[in-house]
Image: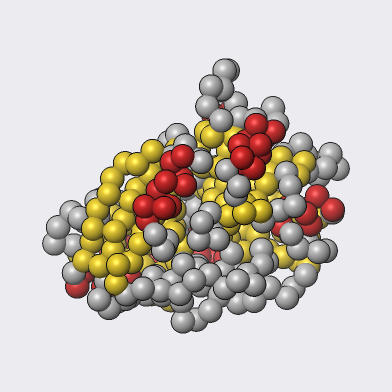
Length: 323
């Protein structure tokens, strides 16, 4: 039986363009990402109008969107001037299914950790963790979770020689923060998520591992954590990493009433060269659309011509855009 992605000769999406997150004070967030993590501001726009209301599934939208870049990869910070959203739940845990983060690659974990300490970031891990030698696929990787001013989870990650993309091992690394390797999302069922990201969007599965032990527990700050981790990639851009908690299985589902203006909200922005084909494949998969379908924009405020917003099986938002 053919999968959705087999319907054509090319993948539905050609790139993961950026990862977006909703913030409460965009000037504060720009300051944090630029001064603490070395991101550079690329653009600063204000968007409004009925097209954006339909695209985001949110009435009365007026938002300020700042695009920032680190290396070759980008994020989009959005502050909704109206309507205002809700804060991230104070008791959020790394195994709740609304969890999402970006993994920022560093050239030196010790230096990066000390820099974050100097800047008094909020901890999410107990400290940097080195994944054990028995875990062949992840052995030697160093990682640390922390939070931004709105309590979004972020990760710094260091790859030992022979692991990760070769670009994360420059001959002479003069920069501490290099770029974004992937965005990670907690999923309930890897196979269901593969139907969305691999079969419908056309991402390629590139890696899989099962991680557990004291290092993983302290990284995620979840006692007894045992994860099935699956990595997928579009032809260009950062990857998407599934975090399925095999244990504990008490992570809470993504709230059904989350709106784009809520600080819990992230969206992963993909690029397609054929929006109508992309919409057809996603409708064939019977996934949940937030926008009514493809929304055509009358101007270039946002930097793309048309787009749609859809949710994966766990509720994580993805925008498919045509520039």
